[in-house]
Length: 440
Ligand SMILES: Cc1ncc(COP(=O)(O)O)c(C=O)c1O
Image 1 (spheres, rainbow, N blue to C red):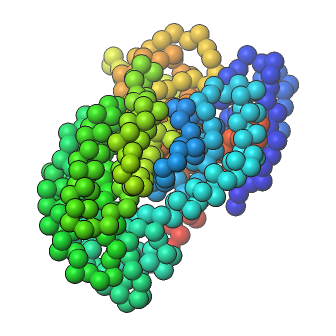
Image 2: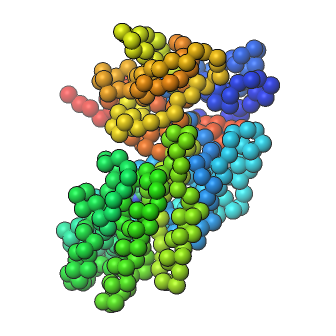
Image 3: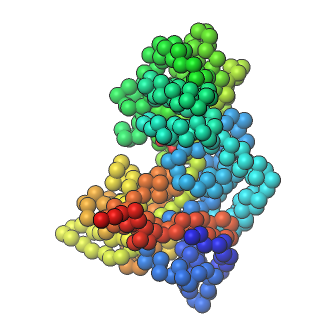
């Protein structure tokens, strides 16, 4: 059950970071000297556990909602679209009171409401997934999906058959694999022929020709997505050029190609000194290439919209040293945020309460029985004492969405912070939730 929005009184005269204020407020606890934050006392038990905070704070300053090209969100982000909507309105900000208020105001503006409606419309527009089942395809047809991004010839045939059964025409775009090199982790690179995604761009024309026989398909698009977390947009532009060249060849053969889905993939800075591609420049380069082509572009930005808009808060449980090694043992684990364990990903870790603790070099580890259960390795950081809350930053993308209940761990609560308001947007799971649906 979702908690109602409750007022949060920001404490202005305390030298504490905003995160601490928010965290304390979530748990309805007394904050520092006699300053009581309004909040539910019933939440207090959560104080020993992790929580995902989604903040109105963004990575870049590009306003996707003003972009005439279409965009849509990837399902890989959390089910709630609230954050995405807010993000499309929000500029990159630090969370000081006046800026937060300004952004909160934009939630309620008519333009924001319009952007919401546009977004909802667009989100229904395409379905991308490698192994679509017949059931999923049929559901999408029943929902009147705008387009299917198809990954193989057998899938084209299946969509055709299901569309025939429903006596509808299904709009499809073949996902092509443009075979471009990307400098990203090999688990999230998708645009080389060795990867499972799409069809070889060199074979695409032949496949479109063969697909002419499918009477219930409208072959009106081409799609591609070459990978995630790209810190250089050159491979993206190379892929775009290859896709546009293919579209020209297809049009010359009489195919009425109307839209190009160019995927997502723009990187974000996980480390403070990392340089990310400028979204403004990326969109400008794209517009220049699309000029005069009478082609609708669809973009699928995921991480670049939401990554910086979330943090994972975790509480230090213990400190210990084994041999020369320092460990900070926290209550969040690989089931909450798997990116460090899965891709050796780096997330900045900040103490929520500023302190002058001596700096240490430590592994920040969770309670799960895997040596791979860590949030940071050999990390230079201020020492953390039991009870200290740490913020694992840039956890808004592929964070909660990849969370699991491994090791019988209940997934963390999610809290949305919106201006001076906060609310639980996903309740912490209960033990009953863990065994729901199981029978003996
Ligand atoms: C087809 C497709 N489009 C878009 C995305 C989003 O990528 P990113 O979050 O890197 O922008 C993904 C990520 O998995 C994807 O598979």
